[in-house]
Each structure stands twice: as C-alpha cells, then as structure tokens.
Image (cartoon, rainbow, N blue to C red; front, side):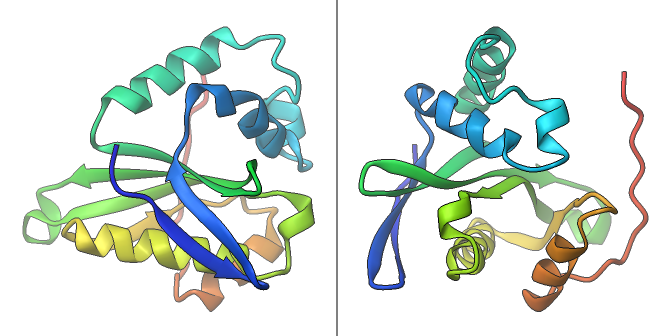
Amino acid sequence: MEQSAVLHIDGLEIAVRDAAQDDLPALLALLADDALGATRDPESSAELEPYLAAFAAIERDPSHRLLVCESAGRVVAMLQLSFIPGLSRRGAWRAQIEAVRTHADFRGRGLGRVFLEWAIEHARSRGCSLVQLTTDKSRADAHRFYERLGFEASHEGMKLVF
C-alpha cells in the first residue's frame, strides 16, 4: 500500500487511500449508481464472491491500485489505476484509469477533477509516459469532463465480451 493524499474540495479535506475490502459495499453502490452501471453491477452486496476475488487480485498486484476518496468516514469517489509496461513508445509505461465514479452528493463540486489530476500526477511520478482511459460512447458528459482535463479521443476502442 502506497502513501495516501489529502485533497481539498469546497473547504473539505478528502483523503485518498487504497480501498479496503470493507469498502466493497460502498464501491458497488458507486458502480451501480448510473444507467450503465445499474445493468452491470448490483448495488447490494448479495453476490460479493466475484468482487471479493477481483479485489484480492488487485490488492496483491503492485501494478494495480483501487483508490477511494473518503470524507467523514464515507467513500465518496473511486477509480482503479493500473500501470502497464510496453514495448511501444520506446518501452514506455502507461497508466490505465478505469471505474471512475463520484458519489451523487459530490458531483459538480470539483472532486472528480482534483482526484483525476492527482491520479495523473501519481502516474507521472511512477514513470508513466501517458495516461489512458476508456469511457462508454454514450457518456457525453464524461467525454466533456475528460476533454477538459486534456484527454483526446485518439483511438477507437473495441471490446469482446464473453
């Protein structure tokens, strides 16, 4: 587990830390709290087994961090940050950002921007040459948000779901 940080939003101190297994119910609620997530992830913790296995795999691999923002003991945002070595771009490391979610009570207050800026700087400090992410084509608001942070839609992503 790496060092955590403190972000300042609207006069609040928000702690950034690695997620703990006890956070899973809050993380599932964040994942399910949108139109797409509601169809993929249960808000309840009734079916925790696959999530526990995924959490354990992320936790034991130093190339992956599942990060949360916590305010007053409550998880209010999350993202997964993965570090990927590659041969292209002269052997560059890249950071992959996934599962970005902010609690409805904190949307529009700047937390997402500050959290992503922190993650980008963390990736830079780990030696990454670029940060990449994917976002569903239907998420127009998310596209504008990422573009304001400097991301460009440079590639067409493809998935094969089993």
